Amino acid sequence: MLERDMLAPHGLARWAAIDPDQIALEHVDGQSLTYAELDHDGRTWASALQRVGVGVGTHVATLLPNIFDAHRTMLGLAWLRAVEVPLNTGYTGRMLEYTLEYSDTEVLVTTRTFLDQVEQISSRLPALRTVVVVDEDESAGKAPTSGTDRLQVLARDDFLIGCSPAVDLPGPEVWDVACLLFTSGTTGPSKAVINPWGLVVQMCSWFPEDTLAPRDGMYSAMPLFHNSGRSQFNYAVTHGARFVIRDKFSATNVWDDVRKTNCTTLCLVGPLTSLLYAAPPRHDDATTPVRNVLLGPMIPDMEGFEKRFNVRVCTCYGQTEIGSPVATPWEHGPWANCGRTRENWPFHEVRLVDDHDQPVPTGQTGEMIVRCPEPWSLNLGYYKMPDKTVEAWRNGWFHTGDVFKQDEDGWYYFVDRLNDAIRRRGENISSFEVENYVVGYDDVVDCTAIGIRTEHGDEEVMACVIVHDTKTFEPAALIKYLEADMPRFMLPRYVQVLDDFPRNETTGRVRKNELRDKGVTDTTWDREQQG
Image 1 (cartoon, rainbow, N blue to C red):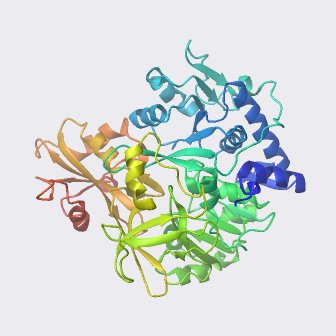
Image 2 (image 1 turned 180 degrees about the vertical axis):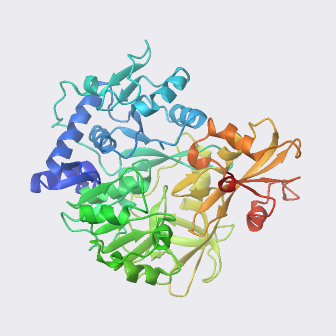
């Protein structure tokens, strides 16, 4: 059974009693909060949220950049056992409206930067009743309005005025729902994964035991609308460590950041490892305080990376729905692997299976499926999508949609995705949603979106389109149209005009694997190559 102290609010409270003056949360710009201060703030925000009607099970969306108020809100909601809906700050227009509407959000916590966007769609969000605007600087951006008869808009001072720290709240249990995290859809819109607190803990429970000691610094630029950012924060404050953040990851500044903040552990995802290694060597590469790098995936010259930066590394494979079922120790094995089946809590069971859920022989490819004997350590399904839940959880196992093979030594190697999700710079992008945006352009007849692998191990978005008139169609005009409404991270880099798509002769389904195999050709338009 998972101890309550491993859940962020309870762990934070424990360390606030043990070491109240120790720094819990730190920004590279010099701001910081001690354990006592962050615990005080989290409980104060719980009181303020409770006063605007937030209680057990209330759905509260957060549209916040990587700022301390995001962590305060996460803790306040946790104490109330409310359900957070963390939204990607890249969401705009239709995507923002869909996620707020579909999640049944009643209260939204955001900043002035996003207020205009919210007000433009608020009339179509019948469940939304309160917007809290947390900016401290009254001159920053648009001032919050008083709202309407239906929608209350509160500035920070009005939200917090007269609130004292809540002291009588039980806080979350492992089985309570922590959040709804939107993940990419393939043949439909994005799904909201129901994540219990056990899964928040589990996502980073693969970290080796000697990763962090009390007062050590962990550096992460992952925001709280990513499961990795949430779980890393949870891990740090339940271990009495410092969680060090910056607004966005910067390969140029990372080593200076960790020197300035004396961090011993660095968290990386996606292509960040490759980007750091590709940077020109510096004379002081091996003299940073960092000794541990938690990353994924590994790069071909992993040993060269470790030697150059004088670090040890380990990796894992994970998903929003299942946390991290396979991982490596510091002795991480071959660079291309994702780890072995974990032997610690929550004791994942992992299989590679064929189309009929029958195990495949060692060395052959199969879809990874997962289950756990420990309750509340995996997702609880997809919110308001029972059909998708049943499909994913068939035969009592969660089906990841990812194809792997396993060698004789037990290492798992990622091969491909069964689904059509695109992974770009840490973001999971729905090919279905990209396609829906593109076909809204008058000159486009049909679209198929795919991911094109990059040298850094992630993908760029390619929109393969059939158009009305190839002579008059301009890819740049399509991109300009998309920029007005599409989240920036979803914007295609490549546009490929085709006469038709390769299709399955029986079902008519597009054979995306053939398009991916062709990749970028002489006829592909590249947004980054345009003036």
